[in-house]
Image 1: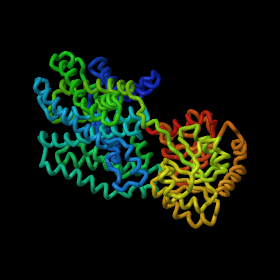
Image 2: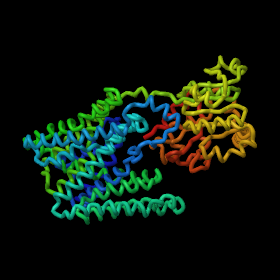
Image 3: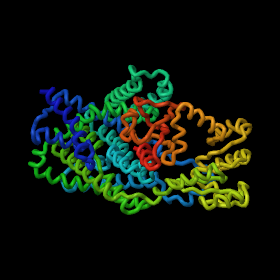
Amino acid sequence: MNQISLLIILLAALVIPLAMARFRITFLPTAVVEIIVGVFLGPSLFNWITTSDTLSILQNVGVIFLLFLSGMEIDFSLFKTKPQELSPLEQKARHNQPKHSVLQIALIAYASIVAMSLVMAAVLKLSHLFSDIWLAAILFMTISLGIVIAGLKEKELLSKPFGQTILLIAALGEVVPMVGLTFYASAYSPHSKSLWLILLILVVAALLFWRFKAFFHFFDQINKSTTQVDIRLSFFMIVTLVTVAESVGAEGILGAFLAGIVIKLLEPHEETKVRLDAIGYGFFIPIFFIMSGVNLNLRQLIGNPHTLLMIPVIFIGYVMAKSLLFFALRLRFKNANAIAGTAMSVTTITVVLAVLQVAGHLHRITNQQSGAFLLSAVITCIFGPMIFNKLYSSEAADLKKATVHFIGTNLTTVPVAQQLAKSWYEVTMYTNNQHNYRAFNSETRIHLLDSLDPQFMIQNGVFDADVVVLGQVNSEKNYELAKIAKNYGVRRVIVRFEDRNILDERRDELNKLGVELYNTPDVNISMLRALIEAPSTMRLMTSTDSSVYEVALKNSRYADIQVRNIPFIDKITITQIYRDKRFIRPSGGTSLKLNDRIIFTSSKSEAPEVRRELGKLN
C-alpha cells in the first residue's frame, strides 16, 4: 500500500504541471494546486493515499529541501546600501531620485507587518479562537517568497524598484519568521537546551562558509559530470546544519534554511541552482505539498463549528497583518500598484507549512487549528496573485528609455544613431564641427557645441547619459574625453581609436577604467574573416531587412535548452555565443547557459521581440 500511495503521489506530481499548462491555469501557484489535489486524494474525498513511515520521511525531507531552496532565494545584495562617495553624475541624478529608497520602504513596510501581526494575534486570542499569541504572530508575519518571485518574474519586475521593494519585503517575510520560530521552538520544546546553544548553529554556518568560500573557483578545475561536487557540497551543508540544529534543541528546518543561505553566499554557478531546483521541485517538494493536502482533512474541519469559524477570521488576519503595507508603498509608488503590492505580500504558504509542522511536533496546535491556518493560507495564494495581476501597471520611471549620447557626427555614427532612435533608446548627437552639423542635422537630432572643453560639456549635460559613444576621428581627444566621462560616472563609454599607436599605449589604462574600445581596421579585419568563414555574412551586410543583434540571456526558461529546441529558432540564426570570456560557435546541440551573450541575425521586425524574450529577467 505504501508503494501504491507513493506511485499515486508521483503520478499527481507529473500530471499537475502538464494539466496546468494544457488548460492555461496561471492564476494559481503550482504549490497551491498540489495541496488542493492532495486534499482530493486524501481522506477528505477519495482516500486513495494513506500516510506511512516512508511518506512521512519523504515529507520531512521535502520541507527541509524547500527551506534550503528558500534560503538560496534570498538576494542579500538588496540589503546593501549604496556607497557614500557618489560620482558627479550620481550626485546630479540624486536630485531627481525618489525621497525614499527601496530599502527604507521595505523596512518601514515590514515593521508595520510585525506590529499588525501582534495586534491580529491578540485579537485572535481575545476572540477565544486561538490562544497562542506568539505562534499566531509568527504565522501572520510570513510571506511566500517563492510565489512573490514567480509573480514578479511574470511581470518582468525583478530588476525594477517596485519589484525589488516587494522582493525585499518577501525576503524579510521568510527570514524574520524563521528567526522567531527558532526562539519559539527553543522556548516550548521539551528537548530544548540553553538558548545560547542556538548560536552554535550560526557559528557552524560561519565556519562552513569560511572553509568553502573559495570552493566554486576550485570547482571549475575539477568539475566532471560524474562527480557533481557542487551538489555533494550542498547535501553536506544541509545534513551538517540540520544535525547541529537538532543537536542543540532547535528545529532541523532552521539548519536547512541556514544551509541555503551559506550556499547562496558562496555564489554558486547558475547551473548549480538549476540542478538543486531540479532535485527539490522534481521529487521531494511536490511530495511535501501533496502530503500537506492529504493531511488536511476537510471533513473534520467543516464538521467542527469552532474550526469552521476560524478559517475566515484567520484569513482576515493574514490580510489585516499586511494592510499597513499599502501606506508604506504609497510613499514611492502609485496607489493601484501599492494595492497590488499589498495583495501580493498577503500570499503565504511555504513558511506557514514549516511553522505548522514545527508547532505540531511541539503539540502547540491541534490538527483542526493547523488545518484552519493552512486552508486560510491557501486562500491567500488564490486571491493575492489575481489582484496583483489585475491592478499592477508600469510606473512612469520604468518606461524611461536608455539614453545614448554620441560625440562626433560622421558617416559611421549617424546611421547607427538613426537605427537606435527607432528602438528603446533616446539618442542625442553632439558635434563642434559646423560643416558636419549642417550636413547631418536633417538626419537626426544634433546639438552644435561651441567647444569640446570638458567643463563646458559637463555643464551642458553632454555626459548625462547611460551610454556615451566617442566617435570622432581624433583619437587623442577621444582618449581625453573617455577618461573624463568615466570619472564623471558614465556607466558605459565606447570609444573609437583610429590611431593604433595611441590605442596600444592606452589600451591597458582604458580597460582598467572599463572603457570599451574599437577601431575601423580591427572591425574590417574581423568582418573580412567572417566573410571568408561565413559567406552569408555579405548578404546580411547588404540586406535592408536583416541585421546582427546581441542579447544577454537572462530568461531562465531557456537555460540548458539546446539551440535546436528554442521555440523561435526558425526566426533567428545564432552565429556566436560569448561565454566565460571566450567565443563558442554553436551547433544545434549546444545548450544555452544563463548570462551567455548571444549574437544572432534576424529580421529587423522580429529582433526586438526575440531580444525581449531572451533578456527577460526571471
